[in-house]
Amino acid sequence: MPKKTKKTKAPVMLQKCLTGITGLDEITFGGLPKYRSTLVSGGAGSGKTMLGMEFLIRGAALYKEPGLFVAFEETQEELTQNIGSLGFNIKELIKNHLLVIDHIQINRSEFAETGSYNLDGLFIRLGCAIAQYKIKRVVLDTLEILFSNIANELMLRSELQRLFRWFKEKKITVLVTAEKGQNAISRYGLEEYVADCVILLDNRMDDQVSTRRLRIAKYRGSSHGANEYPFIINEGGFTVTAITSITLNYKASTKRISSGLKQLDTMLDGKGFYEGSSILISGPAGIGKSSFAATFAYNSCKEGKKAYYFAFEESVEQIVRNMKSIGIHLEPLIKKDLLRFHAINPNSAGLEAHMHDIQKLVNEFNPSVVIIDPVTNLKTIGNINQVQDVLALLVSYFKSKKITVMFTSLVTEQKGIEYTKTNEGISSSMDVWIYLQYINSDGERNRAISILKSRGMAHSNQLREIIISKNGVRLEEVYVGTEKVLTGSARLIQATKLEIENSDKESDIKYKERQIQIRHKKLEAEIAALHEMLEGAKDEITSLNQQKERTYNLIAESRAKISKIRMADSTKPKSEKNKSGK
Image 1 (cartoon, rainbow, N blue to C red):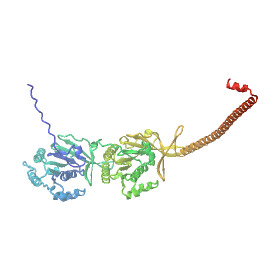
Image 2: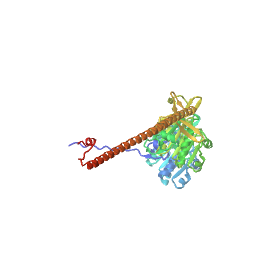
Image 3: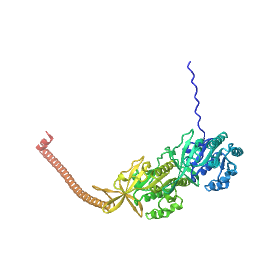
Image 4: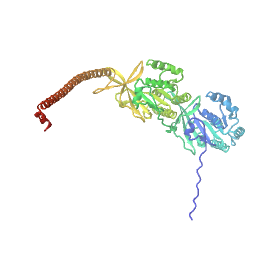
């Protein structure tokens, strides 16, 4: 008999505790380790207390898990004021016993280093609160204050292990904060070894711009995002920008929307853009990028759609004034709340803060069209890789919401199409890439447009001239000479020349048509005359035959009478006999 194989037990998956913090659950692949310890380490002002408090607030509000915040520095009143300034209603959570804040004052006389040193008093105090309020989450802020009077490393490690083990036995998910050490993750260099998960927070200055970063240095029993992730702290709390969480599972729409210019729609397979696509309009300064963007937003609003215009270069009043000069009146659309503006200096915040603001405002307004003009200015607050990451997140976000977004980008004016790379290097992630350029010829500087890329549709390879006037933006046909494209006055001269040539050809054709008509009429007259002559000849022949017949009849009658008088045989004339064949 074959031997029975032993069934292997399925591996026990690590339980996780959702934090509810935007982006953090994505990079931890499901949250912090449940019933285990997590260490959050960072310098002053890096956001440790905020992360800990929001972990409790989100747990209470979203998952109905009561939380206990143990503060060794700030009082309950101070914490309530600080966290409340970010929009969280802590008092309501405290009132409903979903959040408990306990401030513990540490005195040297109470915790003197002795051979019998332990944390039994703290355990008793925490145990009472956990039992009374059915606590599921605990935050200790900050840990080094609790052990500030202990110099014995072995004792410190022992008490840390005992503390974390005690929480595990109580089935409590605990998060502890610690100051960053000089040569270690934490001040004592021990906490990171004892904790099951270690999160590092950093607040650095890049080119005079404050930038916050988060990294998961350790996570026992679980895979996790290993990169540095930017995060922000604003009125909505703690937000992690999870670059690696970008997915490509959004649906692709087959619906088409107009670009706002009939001629441009013609170049785009006659139907315009796909709904939810990302469009890049790039070109040198003064070429008309903002005019194209405003035209797109204006015509979308005229069709009853909502548009959001994010301006990083000009004020709202300046944009409205400038567009009015080319016949685009934005004020009525703003008053109808079909068009909204958000104009801000990019240097006022970091890249992640701007991205968060864009997403927040878009979520509130729910537009169909978004304009970001220009993305080039974001380079002043981040390097090329950071800008690319943020724009990739924005593109993915807009696609998931089926919002059509148009970016404008400044490029250095060069000769030749090979120099059309954008300064942000984002053209590869765009669905449509429209390039505007100058053409210098015959002492003139004119604008031209071409479509370098348009995913999923046929598109024109033609270069067309751009005309920006008081009547708006329009595209003109261009004339290609023997060696160059003709635009501006040269195009008008060529158009006039062709018009004259066409006029001369038309006159010559009309002259020939008249000559043919005259000849035709003359031939018709001659044919009619010949027909008349033919009919006359026929009538004459008929008349002669009739006359001949009458003559024969008279002769026959006369002979018959003569024969009768003579009493002779009747005879026929010889010619008549020949005629009858007898």
